Amino acid sequence: MVTPRRLFLILTFLCATTYAEATSSYSDRTSTESLRILKRMEYKEGIPNGLLHAISLVETNIGQTEKYKPWPYTIRLNRHPGKTLNDIDHAFTFLDYLMELGFKNFDLVIEDETFYSLSGINLEDALEQKPDATSFTISARSTIKYLKNKKDAEQAIKKLVDNNWYDFKIGIMQLNYQVVKNNTDDISDALNAYDNINIMVRQLKKVRRKHTWWESVGQYHSKKPTKAKRYVKNVWSMYQRVHKIKVR
Image (tube, rainbow, N blue to C red; front, side, top):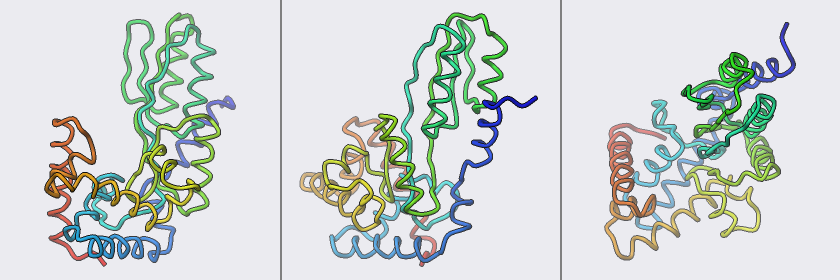
């Protein structure tokens, strides 16, 4: 017999939207126009041709799908550090909360046993194997959501905010929620490609005053040298790929 919770987990898994699925059902005009805005902003601001494009593909993870057109309705939920619960009912309730936020991939520690990268269904199965345990630690891995249109993206953002979860990124350049909130009166503006790119470019150019473009890319991402260096390496690799293909 399928329980209501199991049915919820199954439906959530089946409804999870990948980039390919999202982009198979939208007008190509949205993605193409977003790319044109990126290109115009590069030209207008004197930014190396293809740099913003490469950053967008890295930030949204779209470049890893072998696709090269940006998508403005992208939301990334940063990793949830999770919590430790002392009984299985609380563990199930917390899992339901994480799933409601949109997380799809979890780590679980039951007393001294650790499980990595579990789906919601697999995590539920692991919990049910040890119903009498007294320590359950559940955390959620970063998740990227590609929404089909602006309305769906707005609803996803509202759900996060209504659940008091603010550690997420928005839009074509993947701006942190707090950055968006500090730069616009309406959070949904960050789903507009031009507004999102404009906020990001203002930040990047502030860093650019004291650094080369590539140093600025690293500093924009992180003040920690190791993270900055790794990010520059990823963007540089994507930058080279963008220049080897024709994307219109």
